Amino acid sequence: MIVPLPGAFRLTCYAYRKDYHRHIFRHPLGCLNADRGEGAGRHYTGERNALFQLENFHRYFLYAGIAILPFFYYDFYHSLVFSGSFALRLGSLVLLANALLLTAWTLSCHALRHLVGGNVDCYSCVMGGGLRKSVYDRQSWLNAHHEALAWISLLTIFFADLYLRGVSAGLPLDASVLGA
Ligand code: FES
Image (cartoon, rainbow, N blue to C red):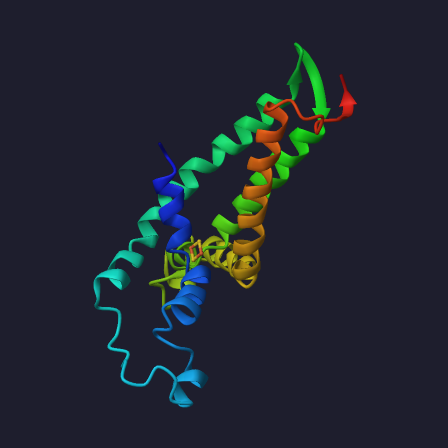
């Protein structure tokens, strides 16, 4: 039931947008391809058509993406209890890795970068400017890796889902790391 929200957040992510616009829709093309005359006849007219408008809702889907993150950590926490006692198992590590990568991808979002550092001409002139600048710098560092995080976290979410389905189907994939 909740898939449309994280699904929309992911589909409208700038990292994938670049790829599906260039390689699937072939519009707008990268500058070099456009210079070569590929896609001739289709002129870029800005972000005015319906698809672009929809993609611009990404900044709002970000809030849903952030709100969903704690549930992944709750799943990890929940997985630490096995047969009534504490246990660290392979499945818990898979859940934790998935949660951390999803967090890194979400926190490196371009829309979040604008949220924490946008609309400011002078950090020392606004309240909490030093703190805001330092959050912005850290987020910018993470943001530089956003495309890689987008693809890696997409793979880990599929892997974690398959892994959990395998375990729940009774396959012997879950091994004890610590405890029971
Ligand atoms: Fe990729 Fe926001 S731009 S998650």
